Length: 450
Picture 1: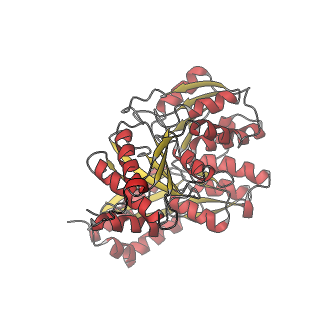
Picture 2 (picture 1 turned 60 degrees about the vertical axis):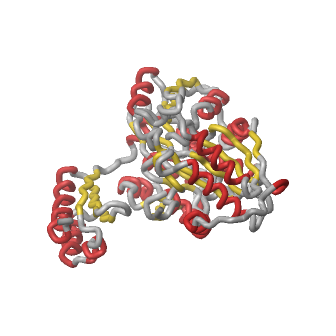
Picture 3 (picture 1 turned 90 degrees about the vertical axis):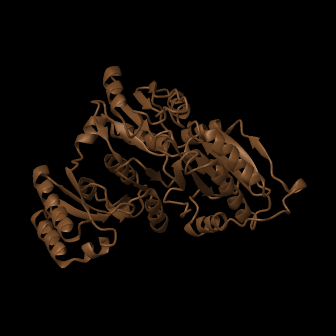
């Protein structure tokens, strides 16, 4: 068995890579480690709507209780709700059973600490070491030392009340379409927007265990785009399976990805004196259009590696109030310790309302430059060599000089595949496609996987 934790917890096909036995071991090891600090540690467990969620929840809870941990089951609830409630309940850890935007056969286990942040690498490594050693033997956990489990009947309502506390306006004049991805926000999103007075249309809110993310939600917003146009809505919001990301659709049925949302929300925060350092946080993949738009607004950008973990790490170090990714993961640090799709949509509505303009008008102010992505397949041991190659570096520098001020070049080795990803942005899609292919062809010719 290889290492278990990736950048977003443990993930795999349920009952194949992510088995009930492994979930039990994760629960047991996690609770045992926390018992060093907290006797009978309290764990919250939330899940999305996947059919495998019940199996993994039962196994995980059994593992936690087998070493004296106490479990509070929250039921089907968004990932960010667990991060919030673990603090509200003064629990020691919160666990989410979800594979986010992946299809239903996948599932995952992600753990938050008592402060609502994802576990640090060292703690994950300690959990892994216990599991991979396969020598766990602690017979003292018997009798009254065993843990217990109970259900929370108020978790969803408490989370909804928290979300409502992050917005100070009514939405009676707005017609809003919501796409719940047949996932964890299928109740939450409707409850929030109806209580704010909006005229709400909801699609993909009938989960059956296997239809989560199936042709819907933030990764497939086509149905939402059509629904916004058909109903004459002012705006549409699409969430993913665990509701930690957001994609926006404007009143003309056009998509606003995370970059445009960051631009609009960042400007709103700046205008209201709520953007420390006059900066937001974004990844290297954010479009050059984001940088140009924010520069014109007097807003800088702290740039991180790809992944919401790295965005949050940078935000905590700098005190940034807003960060996110193109994919729709956005963190509003004033309110949350993780990405929250519904919360992000509420903050977006505050910005829209304050502007007094239609979403389509705000969208059209932001120019997103075309991107061209070409993968160069290389030998597994040659990624570093290719990135250090003088001829390749010279070709990249030559192209950067040609598009200086109107585009950029980004070269990224894949973390999981024998690929180097060559991405260019610029005003002319044919031009940048040609440049991207030129770089990729050179990399492949010199270091190709033959």
